[in-house]
Length: 265
Length: 265
Image 1 (cartoon, each protein chain N blue to C red):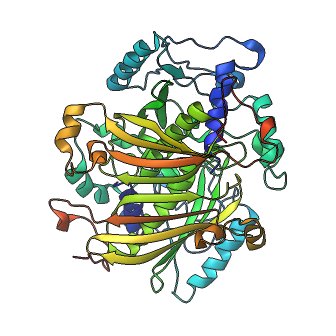
Image 2: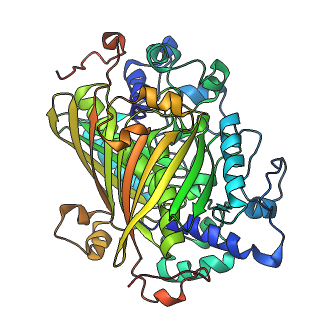
Image 3: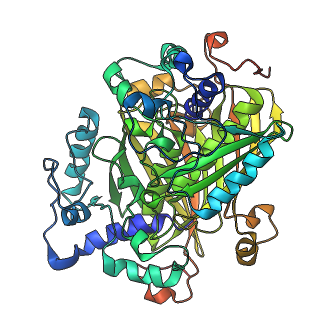
């Protein structure tokens, strides 16, 4: 599926800076904005703490921000929408105007950023280029409910997909997820913080193989509740693997890429 | 993961009728309500057409409603929340009050019903007990965006998970998804209708094996765009398989079940 691309383009846009050269929030946490104009909503970086973040999530955020200080890790900003100039190539290549009208396009929001603060997906991603590793700190709000009190498996799949997609993007270029294989081990309580670890394992031609697991931030609680320790995935709530590939666009070279991006053969 | 249970309990509740014996919408489509009290929101059946449904989705809905007339298929109603009396056993067995407070519980909504009409997951499920087959008619709204103009892969995974979960529930009892393996073949345009077909393949002890594919409702477009026809899944946008198992509750017998439910050994 191509669905990872949007999140990645949103991040690419942010890496280059938003349209108009407006200054983005820096790496320091800041209080969440409470009232936004539509432009502010589009330009707002959602990958920083807001009042809905629990103590665990804030603590982890601070720890990873510390790791960013020497440049070995990077925090990835993210936005609700892709800047218009980034979207153009995708529209040209992928969209059939019979299926998606211009006015419908104007309503769209990135799935993982389409809830109000605290109700849905609260997350921030950090990337280590040396380790080819993406860590997503995630807290699922009350609108992500599956079984009573727990995060819906589809919401977990969404965050795994987003994390492995971003990992492959940062490591290799614009990719699409072709396969997602998730083993669910234990339910994740709503409003709790978890850590999603994603690692690029290998690249074969156009395919990127990325592994992933979801772990509690409270290791004590986590390990004591693991029941099937023969598989490494059991150490986490969820394990998964995924392979992604570069989409076969007709005019691939015109797709937007980061300056430092490369594509495998 | 346990996340399928909530949706199933919501349906179980609806099969028996909502609390207080209030009459539910019948099988006939009705105009979407525009203003709801909180009780109405909880009791409202979301598995009927609303003004956001496109022509394809309405047509398919009518076709399946026709199939329901002889009793071979059933439409499954669905709700935002589980009636309180259904939730009690789950809370007793699964919830740690340190992790999820009572007031947070009151905010929760089923993930797949947590968007306003037309913005997120629009869907209805139909089940054939003879065929052990669940069909979900789905239209992804603009808040489910992944790549520009297309449904996020996580949203697709969510609907696949929901559909295979409901299929196993109707066939066998309260289950949890243990594995979800999805091959993404082609992107699904936002605001288009697709058909998610789910089939119970086999039951091995506590495990239910369910296969699933996502097909365009426009077969012509679908088949002409299929590229890897050696796998049956290629006929659809997405294929997936899943196995689910009965959760290992300590006091399993006290869990709410439909009258006609059974559990495998």
